[in-house]
Amino acid sequence: MKLIDNTFKGKPLELDGEGIAFAKGRYYVIGSHGHPRDKRRELDPKEDAEEIRARIFASSQVIRFRPADDENGATDIERSAKLREIIASDRDLVRFVDQRLDDNGLTIEGIAIKDDRLFAGLRGPVLEGNRAVVVAVDVDALFGGSGTAHRLFRLPLGEGRGVRDLAGFGEVILILAGPAADGPGNYAVYSWDGQGENVKLLSELPFDPARKPEALLPLEKNGSKLRVLILFDGDKKGAPTPVKIVAP
Image (cartoon, rainbow, N blue to C red; front, side, top):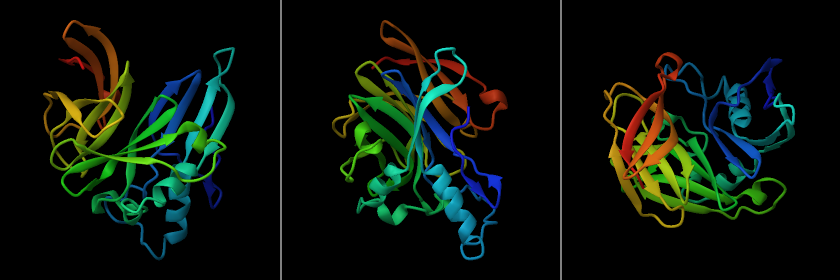
């Protein structure tokens, strides 16, 4: 199924989809809302400004849809660019909008839906005091609503860590935390109630620092343990790996 129709000079652009959630019969897919990844800095901010803007706009969308009755494709596809406007209205985030990730620029990597609110987890920026950012917005405000009402959460996920994924699990949201910057680092899983700014460390993840856990899927709870599936950026086919962590 086709999520977006954005193009630049006749060539299709990518959503740079970073997360997916499911709630009340709908899937929600979120783009990175960030500057194109450009580790070699081949995009010139002046000469390539038009392309950069087009790619940022393509990635700055939330798409929701219902699975088709015949289990092939989707129905009721809706696209919203409202979250970008909401983020840009926030005085603590606006200076990071459209900046490169390696300059602590804004990039979304996680999404969860809880109590009719969308939670967008930011890999970057990491704010002063080593605080990772989650932006919460009413779903109705994104699809057909008006205004920029939202809530900004600053979560203590460890030094230099941002959000790498979010996953709803019962009454809590699981957070896959990892380095906001590129390069090796340590990853962990936290639980969070989605209401305050206190988080509970469930487990540090026992992986080689050179690997990059990118996605988290809760599987099953057994007593005091929760079995989760971790997928990796850069590993062949994501190298899905089950891990037992402390249950929230």
